Length: 177
Ligand SMILES: [Zn+2]
Image (cartoon, rainbow, N blue to C red; front, side, top):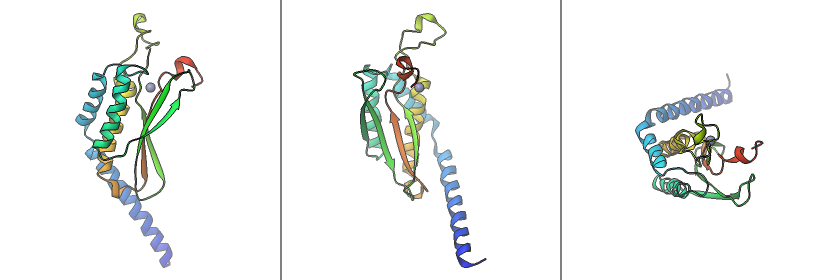
């Protein structure tokens, strides 16, 4: 083996070991109670579909929590492609790892304005509180932001955390979305 080969070989091994240790620590540090609190905070806001009071509240909550965890919250404003007059706000933040390559971790934070597939017919024109759909993935993403921030210097890749808006009503207006 020549020296270049050995150096490359060692670099690969070190990066694999490093990746595995960060990954293992992330799993260990994930706090289920904290994630559950993030979920409960959202469901306590009530329904969170576009235009609801909960929708404004959850936007503010995500941005405040990002700031509290030491991130710079960024927003991307857009118009819904499936219906007029809906102004979306995707919320995102970055974590700079050792590489300029990014891993995107994402969730949507809005909830469905109608439960059109509910087994109970009387519920089908009502909005859902979205503990699972929207709420749980948003909670997990916030908890990941919390623990990965503590490992910032060790991360082999940079991370983009994205909370999408206006995701959940698309299929109601346009089955192609
Ligand atoms: Zn959904």
